[in-house]
Image (cartoon, rainbow, N blue to C red; front, side, top):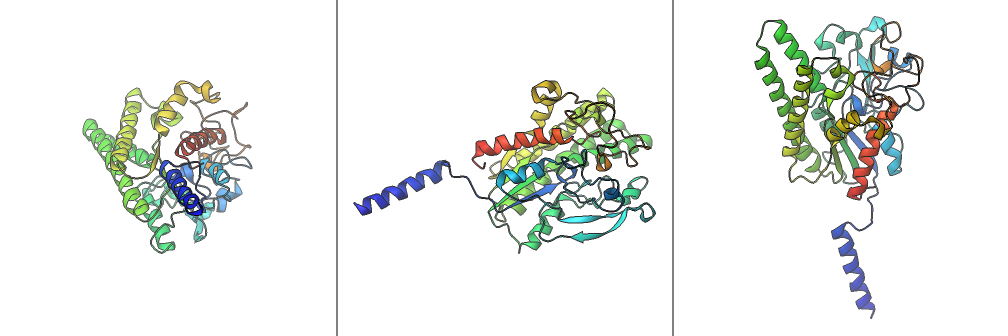
Length: 352
């Protein structure tokens, strides 16, 4: 009888394991790779910190982005930036030595691209970019840094989030504009921009497959690129440019998806969600999805960015349920909606 009960218990355990059962994984840490949408404070130093900023939203006690909102759902402590610092204008307080925090695993940085180390805000782009001097360490390097710190592999008990691609859109748009301004062919430049976005999507999929999953990560959630063409930044452009941006985003997402086919990751469709939010804002509790909540005038916001936006430099009126803080970054409420999407998909997967 005792042997029968033991065998039955093994069979039950095997069945639960095969169908997922209701046993949820116990994550030991949260690891995030990406850009400003997931940056928990890389640039919260120097003048940025003095202005009350540091994250790309409405900064303050409740100014949390989606990564910060996800951590307590797993019973984990607040994520901290793996690297901090600025490489900008010292006279304005934007030159702060880089500090690497080996116990922190939130690698995402504002301005980061998928592969190229020079993203928006990097001093090598010159002009206003040189004032702030964002580090813009790309996702490819972020992953390698984590692997180096952890002996070349993931432990298997981490929850890993990846969200990137937006800064590749912005750089490609800037390249297109410069090409046209110099007398280049607009159609050829547009085609090149779309092609470059497809390449970035393929590259990101490769990093996830070969440098994250193949290196031992068992719980990887990949959030595709939201529709940048529905942001206030894009809505201020021509219909033709908006259509191009959408094509760039869909091409990136298609190549990301194709590259992850057959790879054991959870893909979360933020693109479709963002389009629905734009079309049906009331469904999500948004009161505005087309204009920024932050007052970006120079006298109110010296960087013209949500990076230094606080409750002290918002537009007049209630903005608690605005979707965007600036031209492209969500408000705390906007991030909560994204976190809700991620939470729902993780729950379906049995990870929450």
